[in-house]
Length: 175
Image 1: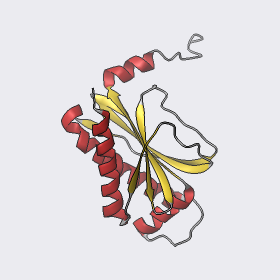
Image 2: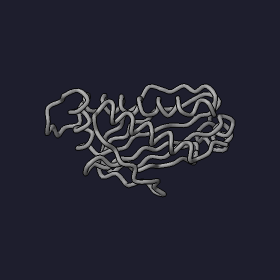
Image 3: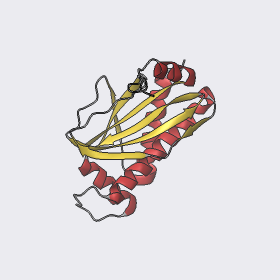
């Protein structure tokens, strides 16, 4: 079993490192959340994790903060309001770096892991969850007035397979 404190420390260290090195932003860890904030409007970027362990790493933030990150990362025009392909690409890359670092921190315990190409979703009034039912952790961070979340779920691959196999798949009886 993976110690939850090791996962939390890995995520906090990774977020702090990426924001400091790549964005020049100081980040504060606000603690673990028992329930994620409902999104009125926002972005999520998801990176899958595979290997002897499987799961996902997710970065969640509002559009204003996503634009600010884009300003710092690639010098986008300040005060930009639209979430366009540049903003989504930057959020994907930041998520990729965070999850990649966490992967590297955890591999001495989990064995070799691989990560997927990031997927970014932007919209209003959406919710999401891990369909395999993996228990994970949601961590809250802030930089200045901006809040964001990083979610991380990881379990031995055999557990994720067993959980998925219990989910009924509708519509296959007709095949």
